[in-house]
Image (cartoon, rainbow, N blue to C red):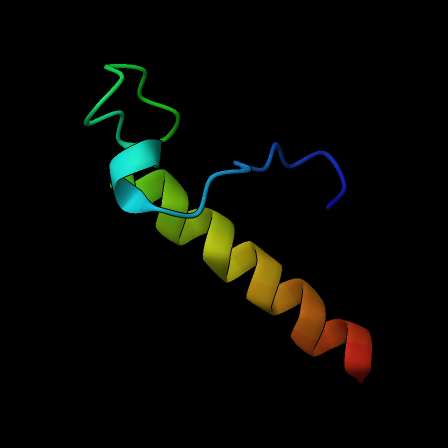
Length: 46
């Protein structure tokens, strides 16, 4: 994904660090990452 740092976890509770206290990414960061991934796949196929 280019220079974008991806989060390996896919569960919100893991990304938000509910059990570990280690926050990997904000909710807004997750949404932005998802949009970038979707955009890359849509334009890659055209």
